[in-house]
Image (tube, rainbow, N blue to C red; front, side, top):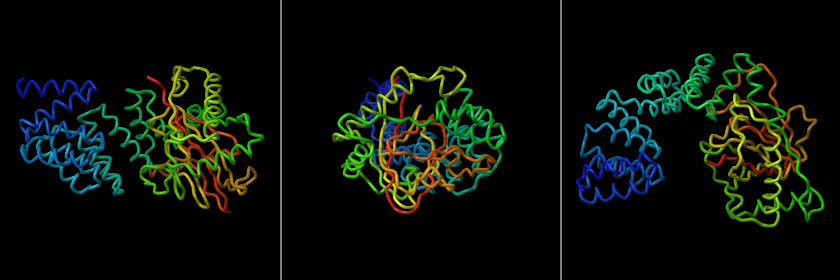
Length: 401
């Protein structure tokens, strides 16, 4: 097979999602022609997606050296350098991409993201708009434009930016979250309340005590102890990737199940199935339109101490999200006017200030209770003081298929 035919076949595999087959062909091409720019660039893309940054860096450097005017190589190199947290070098590569291919709009998203990090929101807005001029359906550009506009306080244009995304994907989590912020700032409260759906979609779930335990106090004490001693526990958290502040994090909680965690898994599954069975389908609603027949659960635990909290965030990959409370400090009380330790809704995160005029909804945690909500709903934990631990188990439901 000629190199051009092999490259064409690999691209077909890659476009169809057959990444392993594509990678194998790219590797064979690079054995014969180590500096083949398209093969090096596209193989680097696969390495980047899989987190193998050293290999992606080596291949994009090879491609740009072999073909200094190859736009896609510079574009990929910028993405790799951005993933390596080298923003200045990434910007230089993206700009080189634009010089070699002025019609290329992809790098403008990366430039806009860097402008946002530097708090140059006007420049970020221009970069995202340039990306959208060339690619009107560019979802990251439209979403990030909405974020920049909300930070600057331009709710009308932010709303229009979310319309771009939702016209293509009416259930897009991040666009729906940004839309709720814009609607709140514009005083369109009925539309916000319909999205959040307090009392139906967003509400507490109370569980019966699992078999073998006398009461919730005993069960949750055992559950908390297993969480504290879980082998996956980590206190070294990246604030850019996790919303927790001042605490510990236990990913993949179900990797190791003691008796209490195993009982919790069964209890949670029964409660979620009952919750889903009680929902009514509504094709015009981004949450109620997607009530699943089957789902998968991603689950983790958070341990918070004094001043610990969860900053405002959403869960981009979920349909339904929630938090179960295994330990609640005595200082977290339903009669507290400051609502310390409560779960608060609708305060936006990601640098967007809250400019609404309404008092935000919040729910006081209770031992043995979970609070569930659509994954696009902004939520955060108000810091608490006075000692004790707040141990919660967070989860996302992902629709099968």
